[in-house]
Image (cartoon, rainbow, N blue to C red):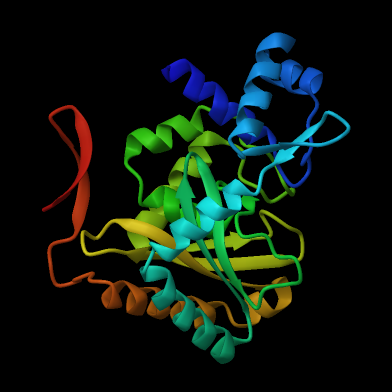
Length: 262
């Protein structure tokens, strides 16, 4: 059963903006499984609406995923608080404001303001090469970070960090200072700064970021940093974060890493 669930996750992971459609043979080859097994997985997912089988016999994501996404957002009340702050932050800075979370090993964009035409609700961004991703990684236990460092770090630009030890040092620095920079690491000509949003347990549940052209970024670097850090703190306070309490750290408790206040 667990093996089947893991395979389903791998199948859904195939569908990206760059590869939105898959045939049975292509999926089988990409996943390293037999064509029969790939056909069974794809057709089963289509039967429950997670995938859609087109007349060509190829598959794409099903609309049931959109329904599930809407249910998730409706039951994420802190997103409304973040949305209001994003509107204010954009009005004050003129920068693109982004909100992201980290789940299932991927950085997920929850909202962008202003949102371009056709902006995807859940666009996968490089977790290791974005300010938002660095913030989310800094809030995770060391074990989760070690898992990422074992994977190849794809170079998006010549500025992308691809050395595991360099990324480790960068994440530790973000952890200590409370914000992260992205200097043309994901896209040439653009930079970003992001800060963590914490819940009542002081757990980092999302990252709030500002993205601007490189020239503008270097001209307003400190002002943008201060603005996004302040906004992230305001959202955190609004959803129950108490900075007066001892700051929690990840500790090993009965074999599991947990946030424990000093």
